[in-house]
Image 1: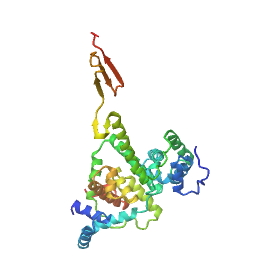
Image 2 (image 1 turned 90 degrees about the vertical axis):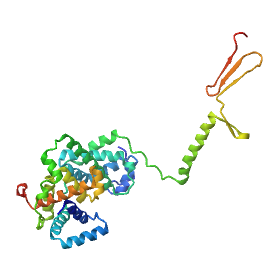
Image 3 (image 1 turned 180 degrees about the horizontal axis):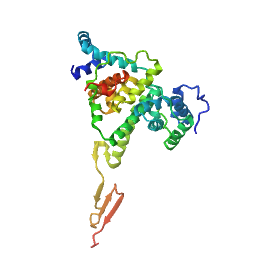
Image 4 (image 1 turned 180 degrees about the vertical axis):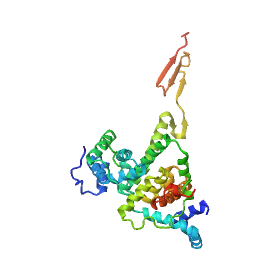
Amino acid sequence: MKTDEILKLQAYLDNEVSSGEARRIATWLAGDSEARQIFQELKGIKSAMADNELLVKLPESREFYWSKIQRGIESAPTPAPRPEATRWWSRIGVPFAAAIAAVAVLMSVTSFDLPGLRLQTAVHEIDASEPDDGSITFHSQSEGMTVVWIPSGQ
Amino acid sequence: MKKATSIDYPAAADDILVKAAQKGDTVAFEELVARHRDKIYARAFSMLRNEDDAVDVSQEAWIKSWQRLTQFQGDSSFATWMTRITINLALDQLRRQKRVRSDSLEHLNEEMGGVERQMPVVNTNPTEGLERGELRIKIDKALAQLSYEHRTVLVLHEFEDLEYKVIAKKMQCSIGTVMSRLFYARRKMAALLAGLKRDEFPQ
């Protein structure tokens, strides 16, 4: 018998095959004595082991065993409180608050020209304070700085 | 030591103790350890077959469970959840041991079912007439003679009732490997329980 056929028998024993495959294997078993022999051996071991694990006892006293665990958990962080069940409004509220924060950040670096809804960048401005004296004022909003340049000839 | 005075610890159900422990109550956690320590140690021992290693791994499992206690949502029993943590740590330990152990030809044969392929089918029931206590001792002795791959797959399948795919994930191998290990492990168990010695196998 081929190994893959034997493994199918075992999968059938362990309820790991589809119902269609199970019917096919049951028919095969009924007509093949060699397959039945192996199947019975596997089944015998499976049923012998079921609920028959030896119940070994911990070879240490409760106090001694616990003392090492206690040292371990004292050096570990206390379990964080379990989060409360998330309510619908908090599920919606968090993304909404994030969107509001994003808009606020955007507005801090830009300005809206509301009448025309025209987005205007206003990071740097250069204007001539007096048209006739040749001085130039440089103003940066983002840097919070204003520099007035006066030509050396003035 | 943090303690919630309103709880009667020895009488409280596991879920009450777990909830208290999740809030940092170490007395509740100690009660859980006292209740389940034998079961957790037994699972570690069945896989590692060494008392000292099993004690260490089981204690590590308790410490890990304390750290992850808030993740326990009660989908399974606390004992089942603890057992899963223990199995994972025992498998890590076995993998570490395997890395430092040289793979002998005999070991490779075990893995591939070299000897088990040629064993005769055990026709008689090898456990017939045994008292339950005797049967358990015999099964335990036979398990001790298996390679760790064969023993682990049997423990996870027959004692923990895990499906092939879950075992494959835990043992980091394919489902096909699990099936073949389980088959050869069962064949070898049948021979060991029937009292067959290795030199009685046909060559």
